[in-house]
Image (cartoon, rainbow, N blue to C red; front, side, top):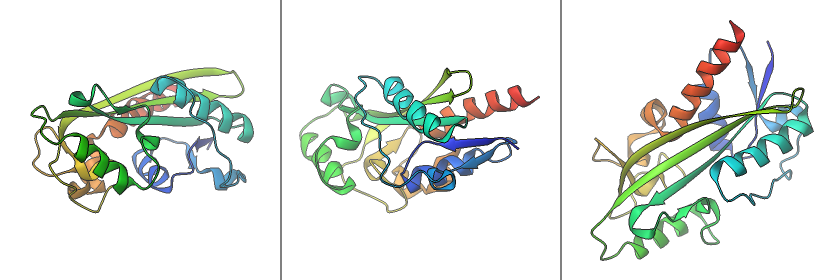
Length: 197
């Protein structure tokens, strides 16, 4: 069974991606499994999700010398001109809660609460130097307050279309069925299964 490395040190992302990529005939592994230290990091200097995902996939893939998938995800708020976008993780210094509070503060008085979560995955093969991309997007709105404890990042302030609860209230299992990352991973999974057959 060939290895597939998840190019992230984020344990939440590792668990989420591993849960979705089961039954792909790949051994889904984390950086620790190939002795990449926790300190190994990649500067996200790209201007798009695809560029940042590619930077991470290539860096981890070359270090491990195995097929590698990386993601770059962002929270895009319409009333804030698409911010925080590609800068979601580093919008302001501090914790996820600090960043959520910053968004809620900036949304005060705004009537347009439309938002979206976007993921772009990059699959990198160090043997062929080929990169492939898979995108997922889920629309919704910004909550008026932080709600729920099951998610991470901006999950506690994002209400997906068709629901009244935030991603953090809905829980990981339900989120994994239709989230931005789940959509992108479903496309990746389809590709991996097609390649194996």
